[in-house]
Length: 173
Image (cartoon, rainbow, N blue to C red; front, side, top):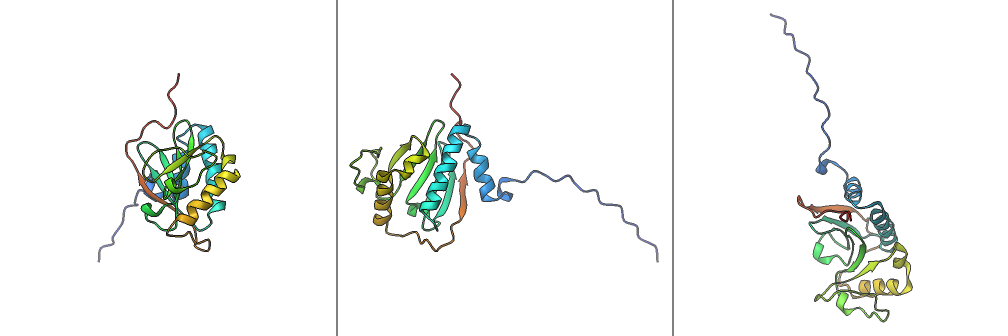
């Protein structure tokens, strides 16, 4: 019987991991890094504060054309997200997605005129700790039909990344 010889198999160099192969946390970090260091730092601190305030929330990430939005939801359904942190080239906003129009806001913090949603442009992440903002968060949680279970294991879920995006940094002057 003839002896078989096999040629050594050349290993291909490891290709860069595609977005789908990267962990959700890594994907979010890469998306945050597209913004100026100031906006990215403000967003990271704001996200930490919201995570501490909403244990058990599922974080739904949408890296859309206009903004990067991280929603906080009791379920994986986008329509059930109660809050989001949204990054724009010059600022970070806290959005009240459900019942934003029903919130009592004697401090006049809320902006927007849509049928459902309101937001606060965060001058700093410390605004989230402001008693008035904490009251708005508490109202939104109370008004929400679906509750975020603090005993649920929170997860970060990349829902979509748009191929086309507006610049994430302000234009140079």
